[in-house]
Image (cartoon, rainbow, N blue to C red):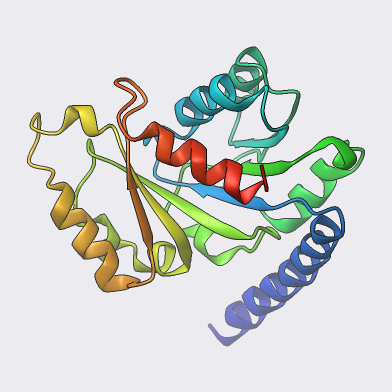
Length: 218
């Protein structure tokens, strides 16, 4: 057991070193970066498609799309108007790491990117431990899930800066309680900023768009 712990610490230490290099490089280019995380199916790619449709003429968003086996999400983002979209196929790994992101950024048109969004693999466990050089983690929680997820996966919510409650148009079709979900998240991290939105109805989307433009300095 002690050997496994030592190996894990070594892996995370190397990851943190690479993440610091990425962060320094992005800061030098004045590019804010966010790490978008959630369970599978919470709506990360759909939110990014709607974001591109609304903001692609206002800010240049660079996108890294992580997936376990396909480039499906990256293709969707390209079709939505992404001007630079880089897929990462992990080949079974349940998270992105800094080495993957560093490789993906090689050759990226950093002088043309106003904001970098990293769409992580759908998972609320492993991605919480891996710094990717981002400015903050943004965690999505859909109303099709359990409102106790912040309590079940506290590390992710503790390390996030923004909580986005998605699919609010579905409220009432299950026992999900948005106020309870938000209260549970704030128990874990009182500093979380919370947004509520629906990509289908458009409710709450403008707050998300405004926040991204402010983050990008536009």
